[in-house]
Image (cartoon, rainbow, N blue to C red; front, top):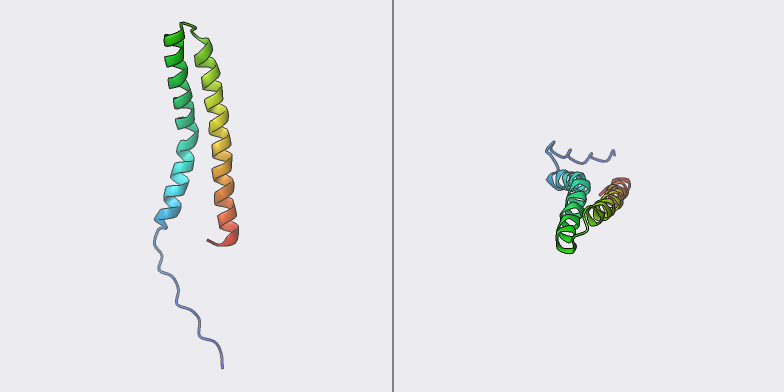
Amino acid sequence: MPKPEPPEKPLRPDFRRIAELSSVGLLLPSSIAVGLFFGYLLDKWLGTPPWCLIIFTLLGVVSGFLSLFRGLRKIEREDHRGV
């Protein structure tokens, strides 16, 4: 006797997945913005323009790319597991 096939899942968007992907897309610009903000404030406070702005912007870029890479790798692992 053949096995009955499981019912098909209805086609609807996976909102959790959409939220994860959109948050990954915001990681890089938000990290850069935070670096710019703190660099600007430190330059104003210490009177050292543009050094803190440059340093913290570069740190924001590096942090953003690391976070982006980690987030994409996490999503890729979940795809392979079928979650």
